Image 1 (tube, helix red, strand yellow):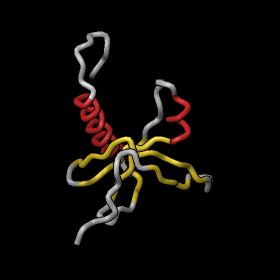
Image 2 (cartoon, helix red, strand yellow):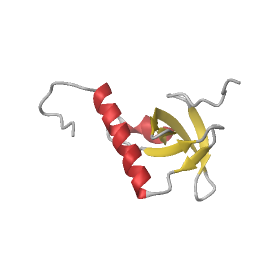
Image 3 (cartoon, helix red, strand yellow):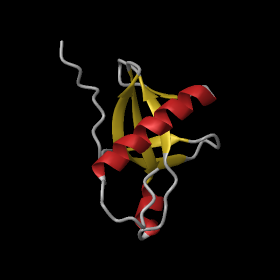
Image 4 (cartoon, helix red, strand yellow):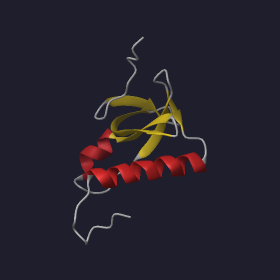
Length: 102
């Protein structure tokens, strides 16, 4: 059976925050770490207003049913954060020595 719950980069969906307010987020990246799927998202409004400034990015775990869940430990967050950072550095690799790619 094919999984139709795949979340695509560029997809926009609505999350409900801790204040029960709806927030639109856009998927910036998707990655698998230690057998679990994760997505990196940011608020659509922040992306639209950023004009090349840094935006806040947060990570969500995607279970096999396509349900989203929070990352529950600092260790898990560090692993996922590092994996996304490495993937972004590879994708945006450049030879400019003024750019810090650590």
